[in-house]
Length: 169
Image (cartoon, rainbow, N blue to C red; front, top):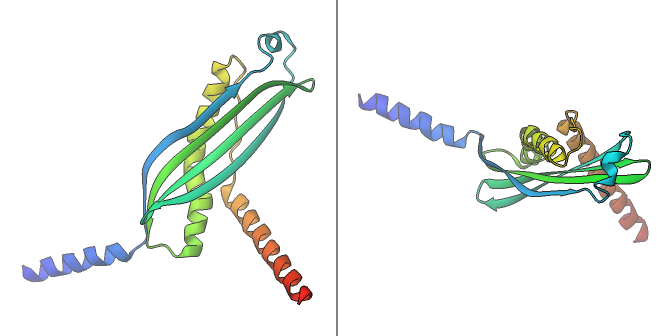
């Protein structure tokens, strides 16, 4: 019987060194909607030009606890006139431990935004409809590819900085 308890404790102790990931909370951090030309904009033919900007950021809140913020800005114009501007910051608090630094960066920069995106997409859609405009259906985003591209640019900038520093000496 004592052997069973000991093996269970060893299994539990070993599990603590394993990578762990837990979503603690998802929330709207910031929300903004502007319709500068309303009500005139409702009387015009609806042929929108939509621009979407996406950004992510992460910060450490405590030991093994991180906040990840997915920021989406939608700017819509018709005939070069602004129709609306919708900004959403969808955030999440994640408990992450036992992950090497390189994998942690990818988790915070790609995996966590993938979790937040459906919530942000719903918030944007709801916000735009409450402004009395047709819904915006955001296409899925490949955050893995976005993260890989950001890492590639970062490496190129570091390489350029190293080359510059080497040539000035």
